[in-house]
Image 1 (cartoon, rainbow, N blue to C red):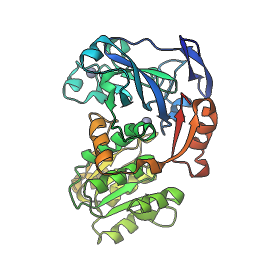
Image 2: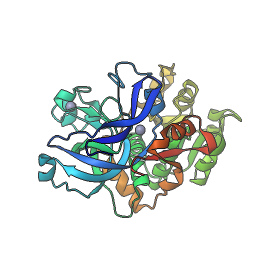
Image 3: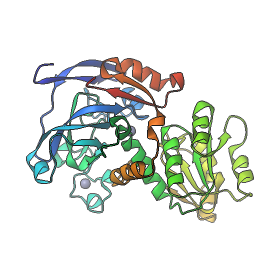
Length: 355
Ligand SMILES: [Zn+2]
Ligand SMILES: [Zn+2]
């Protein structure tokens, strides 16, 4: 590697990526340059790689994707330095950076920034339309990073972005101690949601899924419901004395899963969406109205990164068990294939740009 370039995965067009040399990014005053030690493949990445969000994620090609990262600060901008950031600190990052000035940002709801997509106004979304972390280095705003404890591995820290997304959705579900919960879908977000609701004192936790992932859900303490083996709603009712669950964390993203969420929730309960269905789905709106069901949409992880890190660290949550595969960045194509096709019981697949 010369001084000015680094290795990265560059998406040149839909379904066309390459491992190549690109310039090491410059930083501005409120950013740090971090050496990326681990970046985890996200469930959104295959959709970005396939070009399913034309003109949005990314706005234009090429893009360096990747946004679930952890690493070491190697360079610090002036404002970042005045705020206390230093070379050598271990950090992890999230994708969203709000402009900091609009009314949504001022309310702390920066994932809903009114200047979304305007880099010239200070907004970023790394790995979506702004340059991301499938690279040896990332230029990251201090608004998007948090320090990690000495005892936390970079691999686990790279999972704090998705974990903090699940935490936001669970908090928005208004979960109270003892509440019954259905986690609908047992991918990484569903499994992390199970870890979170248990740490937050949920009562009975049910999980709907299938195969290996449902087995993991059971090992994490959820009562498994195999959606391929029977009617999920009936099963939920049978396990809750006919009442349904107080809180549903919807992680499936399928039309059927959303419908089940609307029917499995108890009167006065809440459905909190982690999933983003690929298109609009029919929901039983009359049931939601008459039974006062709250349906909450959620966008990423506003202000939940630091609480998520503390929750994992102080509750001995074993996120490492969700990390099934690790590859150097040079083998990204293989890592991506295993992740996308769920080969070899893959869950979280991590990539190491500097190995
Ligand atoms: Zn992600
Ligand atoms: Zn804003």
